[in-house]
Length: 253
Image (cartoon, rainbow, N blue to C red; front, top):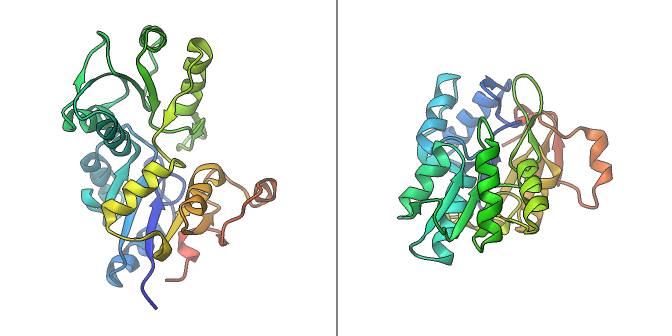
C-alpha cells in the first residue's frame, strides 16, 4: 500500500499556545523517521512560517518552516488568483502582512480591491469601522478563517470568525473565508505538499473546520480530543471522523 500523507492541525493537536501537548514531539519524530510526507496546517494567520517553526522548535518539535502552511498563505494565494496585482486594507499581524506583500499586493486604505481580516492580538475599533466603510464602498471582503474562538494556555479566546461576524452584521456583506474548512485552503495545501487527497489524512481537533474540511476534500480524518471538541459533542454533527483518539500520541503509524 502507498504511504499515507498527513495534514495536521497545530493548535489543539500539537500545542496549546506555547505548551507542547504530551506525545506530540514523538509523533512528529516518528513521521520524519518513517519518511511520511506531512504539513502542519493552521488557521492562525498571526505568524509567518519562520516564526511558527522557531516557536515550535523551542518547545521540542522538529519542524522546518517549509513544513507549515497557514491561512495567511492561502488568503494571499486566493487574492492573487482573483487579481494578479492589486491593493488591500488589512487587519492582521505580521504573518498575514508578509504573505500579502509577497504576492506583490500594496496595502492601503484608499480604494482597496480587498478588505482582509485576519487574527490579531488587539482588534482596533477604528480599523474595524474603516473596514466596514470600505466594504460598503465596494471592496471585496475576505477573511483568513471562520473560527469563532481558539485555544490558548488560559482557555478559549475570540478569533477571526467572531470579528468577521461583527463586520458582516455592520456592513451587510458576508466574507469569503480562505482558511479551513475552505476547499481552497485544502487544495492549496495538498498542492504545496505535492500529494493527492486519496492518500492523505487530515488530523485535527475541530469538527467544524478540520474534520469537515478533510471529509469534503476526500481525505481520511482523525479527530483528537486534546482541543476544543469533546467526545460527547461528536454526535451532534451529521458527519463523523474515521477515527477518534485521545491525542496524537495514540495514532498508530
